[in-house]
Amino acid sequence: MMWPGLAGRLSRVLVGCHPRRWRERYGGEMLDVLDQHQASARTVLNLTASVLSAHADPAYRAERPARIRLSDGEKPVIAVAAAVLAIVTVIFIGAWNDRWHLSGAGGVGGAAFAPGQHLLVSAVGGASQDSMDTMWDITDPARPRQLSAFQGGEPTALSPDGRIVATLSYDGQPVLWDVANPRRPARIATMPTGGTAPLWGEAFSPDGRTLTVVVARQEGNVTASAFSIATRDTVFTWNVTSSGAVSGLTIAFRDVDDSQPTLAPDGRTVADGSPTSNAVYLWTPP
Amino acid sequence: MEPGTLYGALSRLERRGWVRPLATAERRRPYQITAAGQEILAEQVTTMQQIVHVARLRTAMAWGA
Image (cartoon, rainbow over all chains, first blue to last red; front, top):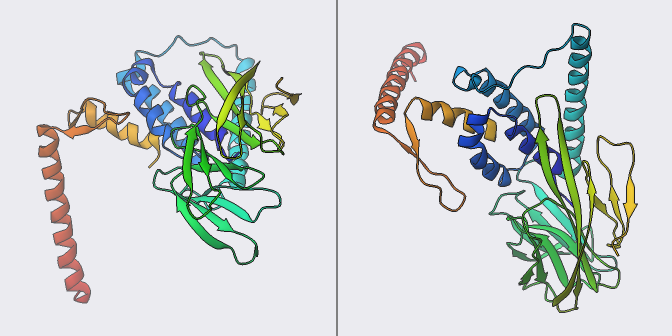
């Protein structure tokens, strides 16, 4: 649940805002680079500058879409709206990053623990591929003891019995790790979610028998006058045994305009909300 | 380095013919310096060397470093 999603999504939309010829040449590469980059407010500002300079570049200017004609009355309204939107976006992303990036890029990538257990998993190294997950014994929270380290990705959930850790690997797939012996973590399985859509939530049910994963598949639509993000929130649920064997996948989805879904800690209820809507929708996959 | 800065620089280098892209391998795109790029780089290094040389002389004169 530590996905710095908004900056990443805006960055992807901004790549799509470059002139057509520029996109054809560099768009795919940039998206690949973004996949391995920890997007922040700085990334969004930097890409905004890149979009503006590419559009100002004579080599790409010929590709510019036809201008929209605005009446003199509309111009100040649109200018004020754009300025307010930009300020709100920067503040929002700033707050978002403060919340999730405890010590900036390369810092703690995430942590997971389970009620009643004396284990904590943390990842250090942000989204870089050489980061390590660390298993901690937090019997005395003031003096955590390091038990082991493994390269698993971002830890997102620990099963209630403390035997399985679900992580998000750096290629975007949920992975299960057997930590029954926390000194020797072992990889159990990669959970197929059919792509690398941003993962927004991952949780074990209180009895530890099911694992739920929420991803948001999105498609940005950029036109000369507006941009919108169509999202399909998809909930994957697997049965999991205490040894980590996985079976019985069920999939549920809901189409929303622009969603940042959140999964309740019990792994049952999904909350859809977005910065652009004034409502939060709660739903439970069947 | 932020991706916008990286690709701004790469597109300028490529347009001037100083680097050229190679085939993509496993989602990585290597770029190779061209002969023209090597020439420019050598010129740049020479200029920088001259700047360093002059700076060393001046600081040595000023405080004997």
